[in-house]
Amino acid sequence: MSSAYGPREMLIECLMSAQFGHGWLSRFEVMGLDGQSIDTKIPPMWLTAEPEFWRRFDALRAMPMDKLEAEYEPVRRRADEEQRAHKEAQERSDWALACRNWARKDYWTVDELVSLMERRDPEQGGWYEPDLSFQDTLTRALSSGAFEDRALMRLGTWQVQPGAAIEWCERKKFSIPSDLRSAVQEFHQLTPSSLAPAQQTQAAYESVQRAFLTVRRAAERCISEEDEDGNAQTDAEEVSLRNPTGRAALIRLLADAWEFPKVVSEADKSRIRGFLLDHASGDPFRFTGPTFDRAWKLAKDRVRCRNPADKGSDE
Image (cartoon, rainbow, N blue to C red; front, side, top):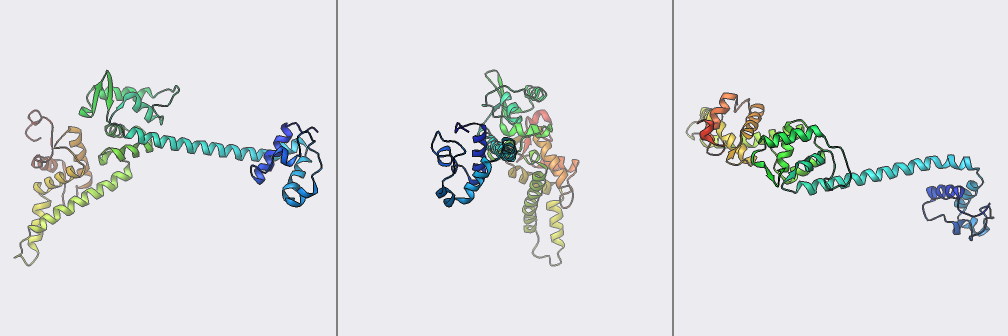
């Protein structure tokens, strides 16, 4: 058989490389000089130098073609799996990098947000079919002013802040790529209600606990040193935590913790209201709908809604 490199030689080289590593086998090192037959007798000095290597080579070249193909099949499958795993790892790395790059931006256009929600880098070439339902819902929300001052029209194109986009997608129950959410959370302030459920529960617990301890310390400072039976501590706690003044103090603390501006939207008011009714309805704050409304009025020196003259005196 000629030494011309064909399917048989390729299979032998692949099987040898799979067992002994690339670089071990080449036409010139194993088969001898170019022009000799694959059946050329192996020099005794080669057999002495690497006996296992040459025994394997001798066994392979003695196999018929169908046996070589059967030997190569699992090698081919492993190679395909390794190549696929490498490609997936590279795609994950590229996507994570793209998420960080886009999360750093101050605004996204509608097309960019739609692309990111499809786990695609907006700068990636090629055609794809966007989610028209999501695109239409987003465009309608922008046109109706749902994003308020967190979105703008520039050169005939809607643009929205990344943090606002993620929060809106969460409220509308759209599936957000986890890498994208994490990257936006790193560069933009997200309110606890926009986080994943586990994160939201933990953030709620920590925020209320921090605020509770702060208000409790204030209550303890009000305790009369002359009261020796402990009743004053109970009275001070009742006054400072369970009445509108104490609840207003908690609203102020949470507004600071979440970095709310002094003037917030109705949506932000609803967000903090829902948070407190969910996580501070029991002792010691006892938030309900009516108690929140009364406390909100008292906290207006720290946080209130827009256009108070138009919203009524309670804002």
